[in-house]
Length: 282
Ligand SMILES: [Zn+2]
Image (cartoon, rainbow, N blue to C red):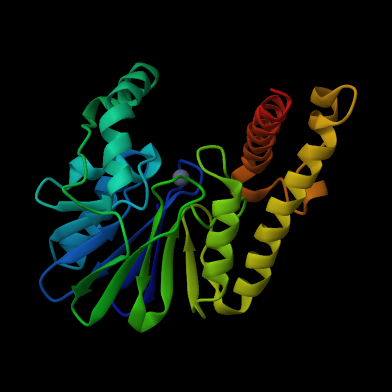
């Protein structure tokens, strides 16, 4: 697990095991807030030890930026903490969480120690503000990667923990391309010092404009490419030829996972195009 201090009392963690997934911590004089848990139990536990033993504060709150396993399945390793998320996160975790955990347990023994812990406190509209020491954490809805996505804005430092609303390769398969486009545009206008992506490295102030542009370009490129492919005689073959570079992204992003995520984006959008066409015909 990589670890970095971003500013006073603000920490960042990144997995070395799974998809460069990230988490954060903000500490106050008496307690700390954790933003997301890591994918593997041992990494979440290492993060907790660092906060509780080296920084010497207990974790009182855990914020889940969205319900996906790689961000929320470590909730159970903070037994005394209050879990905070969007109302939709709790809803989806309640509906689907147990079934996906059981599947994961069959595939990987690590997950036998995981128990699903649903958010205790949720919000659905507007923002939620949490004061930690000298910092305001403002939680806001940033959907698109998933419907329940939230980001955590550390107001004093102008740092945004964006969850998967911001990634080296935008991923829409569980969300909506238009919503993600609007979210990324809004993030681009916030005048941030850093964007903490849900996966990948920290985006620094001087890199934000370019990263926002690249992500927006990518989303419009895949939309166009999929629509064009759908019109071809053999759309599946045409789809297979749309590589990640032709949409302005590098395949080396996310430890080589980018190409796979890209292909899944394409198939998802293609199914949407087909569904839209079926609707217009009928
Ligand atoms: Zn993720």
